[in-house]
Image 1 (cartoon, helix red, strand yellow):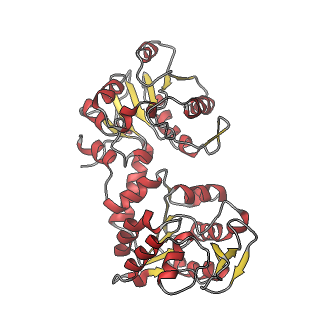
Image 2 (cartoon, helix red, strand yellow):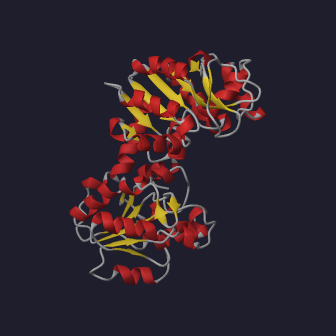
Amino acid sequence: MALQLIQDVDLNRKKVLVRCDFNVPLENGKITDTTRVDLVIPTIKLLLENGADKIILMSHLGRPKGKPSADLSLEPVADYLAQKLNQEVVLTESAIKSGVKELLGLSKIKIVLLENLRFHSEEENNDSDFARQLASYADVYVNEAFGAAHRKHASVHSIIQFFPRSTYAGLLMQKEVSSLSKIIESPQKPFVAVVGGAKVSDKIKTLEKLLISVDHILIGGAMAYPFLKAKGYTVGKSLCSEEDQKLASSILKQDKAGKIKLPQDHITSLSFGGEAIECPAQNIAENEMGLDIGQKTIEYYSEFLSSAKTVFWNGPMGLFENKNFSNGTFEICKTIAKLNDCFTLVGGGDSVSAVMQSGLADEFSHVSSGGGASLEFIEKGQLPGVQALKFGV
């Protein structure tokens, strides 16, 4: 069953409840990366253009553990939205207090943002009564929070039952599902995956799933060191747990393990984030730790990428937040961005941050807003929030 699309609906005089993913990074009460908010604005504008009477936005932010926290209020998001949309966005005191309905009865108010859903433990518990209260605000439900669609939470899962035949996918949700479906259902070959990050254990299922369909997996970041150690190379003080080494060994014993490509050289340091040292071989000295891929590896990986027709990138190639160890990540980013006639998808928080910092986001076919959600979609081919939209609860 296909998703019902919000652009196909007559919204005249309708109240529309939109689950967004406004889980943005904050510093001193300011949003440091507005990407997740910016991605939802086209859907909000579409709702306004299509005659929606009221737009009620809702989201989680951080992990307040079921209790209100001033540091995790959505007030900075409300302020930013008001500025971008050039109209008032009213933030409620609470997601479910009685005053919300009174607010929605005021004709001059068009857009309301409910306060952080996770200030209520019922949200993460997928509580039906909590979902019913949220659902009572509107006639139509739109899920635009792909980044939360892998969770069975009240605002993305149990709420569906209260909107029979009135649940729709927003523009971003549609693009996310369509783009990731290309990766798992019919990737054009050659298909190359670039996988980085810190732990093999975090991505073991993704790696095993990708091994079936890809032509090559290019491993970078701290994830590379357990694989190198499992193959008999020395990794010095690099991040490499015993559990990750065992997992890497088990993957390398599989029939398709030849698809896995590992760094040929490194940028190391005597301490985490210290002075950069060029390490021209695969072995890392006992007193050094690997923090980036080296130039030989960049060239080696670029050869595989140059002929790719589909590329999936998840995870940086090193400690890219530090300028001394960012070259590998940004060079791979440039290589992927320059590919012609190739479907390129980036998923995962750190690799998305790197793409945004590079200024090359527009050169990618799709930059996913969901880190854990995009990985789980690749592993399982479905997500609870997406399945609920399609089939109900």
